[in-house]
Every structure is written in structure tokens, then in C-alpha cells.
Image 1 (cartoon, rainbow, N blue to C red):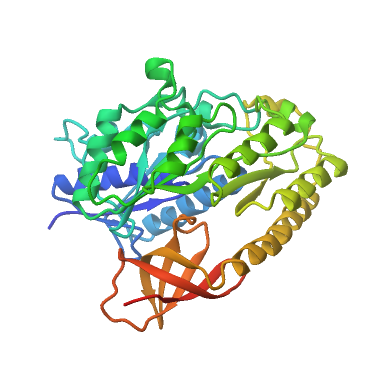
Image 2 (image 1 turned 135 degrees about the vertical axis):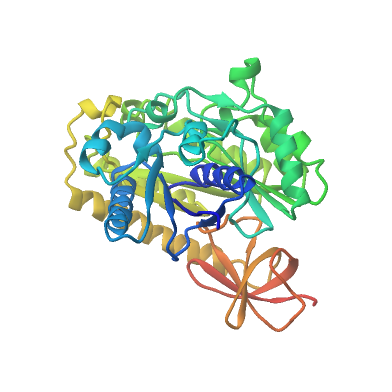
Length: 430
């Protein structure tokens, strides 16, 4: 019987893509591979995250859980890969000896050789773990930005764009497997292509992706606010395949904080960017992320951020607390905002966003939207509009009155009611 391998993925969707490639390579070798199964397995591979303190804590807790399983004989081999082991391999070797091997973020070949001594070459074969109608499409690795708080360049190195040809080939393969929605991801999609041709190539890439048959939606994630490509905004306005949705983490709005963060932009720039997006693409949904409790953040500076959130009314918003990361420029700064204050500030922003989200959702009532169905749940079909990404954004709940509807179908839905983070509707025609 082939060995059963179970892969656990922690952290972001970029990590998920890496796990999916591991699954594809292992299955090609004849192994039985599951993703986040609750059943016992011979080999456990944990793909870790090391971005912020909470993510590191979750990774450590997960490793310790499976280390205990190994001690009790529930599993034979425990392997750790990803960002945490890339950054803290030496310390982890000393602290958790139950782990049989640690591998970094670009060490897939050696990981596969550890499992199968006859392994020769990592192949571009991928098994998606998401519902079959959508998949993440990673277009680059690493980051060239110098944000003071971020350890990603330390962990993943310099920015490295994948070629348009290889990305398009991957997207075509996904489409052949039934994928209808591509979620384009990178640490910074704005920078795509600069390391290849010294110019922004995201627009050229999108021109190729929109040609792919069966792909109906393309969503863009993690655009840096500095020098975001204008031609991409124009394409979003003109091409219905490119969803009117953009994820641009702004991190803060106070000029002093932004300067210390080394973001390369100021308040005026960020306001103008949002205004430009909404002017060129009037119905666009803008998702952003903010950080609270950055070193030196005063009550006045936080209130400026809170007021910006109230005034701008972002469609989607996330907040995380600053955590000091070794070897980053901000590591030298005094982490002087107490954790309870960080927690309070985070909740104040999310409470405000909850009000904004309810207001915006209520405005959708009696309007019709194209919705993709993700799953069936009890008496409801659960879907999303083009303005929502999986797991992080709003969902559409539709009374399951039509048995022929299945996940991956697109429907026209009229909104009948709304809450803070969900909308309720019925099918226009079944």
C-alpha cells in the first residue's frame, strides 16, 4: 500500500499554491495524498507561515500538536516546510527534535527527495484544493519593497516574476480542469514584470489571461499603492472578465507613520489613488488592510486613521496588530504601544467597518448581481459576487429552491436583505 501523506497549510493563499504543487508532485509518484485531513497519516507535512506573531504562534502550535501525535505513534514522519522553517530552522531544530526534517520556501526538490530517494525533478503539476471552479494563480515570488515592518523580503528574497508564458500555460490547464475564476496573487502585483523587462507587465499578462476560454472572472490581490499600473485600472473598467475588485493594503494614513514604515507614499497619494480607482471604475470594490500599534503611533495618529476609514468607506477592510519582527528596520524601534491598546484600536476600526459594511450591503437591496455558487449549506446555496473573494469577503445566501444548481454555476440574484457581512437573495430565473 502507498504511504498516506497529509499536508497541512497555514497562512496565506500563496502558501496554499505551494502545497498544491507538492500534492501534484507526490501524487505523480503514486502516493496517497490528502490536504488537512483529520484521519491518521504516515507522513505529515506542515507548510508554515512566519509573517506576524500570531501566524508564527499558530505554526508552532500546529507543529507541537503533530509532534505529540508522532510521540504517541499516530504518525511516523513529521516534516516542516514554508516560511517559519525558512527563517527559524536552526532554532526549530533545537526546540522541536521530534520533527524529522525542516525545509525552506524554495526547497521543494529536497523535500521530495527526503520522502522518495528516487525523486529527480520537481514538475509543474498541481492539484488544487479549493472548490474546482476557482483557483489561486501566483504570478511572482518575493518582494523588492523595503517596508520597515515586513519580514517577507528576508524570508522569500528579491522579487521574481514568473514569465507570462508559464503563467498563461498554468491558467489554461486550470481552465481545462473546470476553473472559472482566477484569483491572481503575489506579494505585490504592481511590481510584476519590472525584474524581467524593467517595466510593469501586469497589463500585458491580463491581456493574455482574458483570452482563455471558460475563465469568466479574474480578481487581483495585493497591489502596492505606489505606481499601481494605470492601464490595469482602464482594463478593469473595460473588460468584464476582470472583476471590479482590487486588494490594495494601505497599512496607515498618517504621514509620519507612513514615512517610518518606508511605504514610499503619503496620505495625499493614497487618497488620490482611491479617488482615481473609484472615478475610473465607479462600482469598484476596494479591499485594504491597516496596521495598528506601529511603534510611536499616538492616539491622534490613530484617530486620523479611524477618521479616514469613516470618510473613505472601504468596501472590504482587514486590520492586524503590529508585531516586532527580527532583522526588519522597525525591529530597532521601541514597541511602545501596549498590546491592550493595539487590541482596542483594532476593534474600534473593525466596529466602524461593520457599520460601513452594513450600510453598503443595505444599498444593494432590490439590485441584481451575477453570483458564482461556491457550495450548498443546509437550505441555502452560498455564493459570491464579483466584488468578493473566497473566505475573506461577503457571501450571498440564496434559498435552495432549485435542485439543478451546483457549485461553479453563475446565477443572477436579486438582493432581498442584508447584514454586516452577508447578503440574502433569490434567483432571478432558474
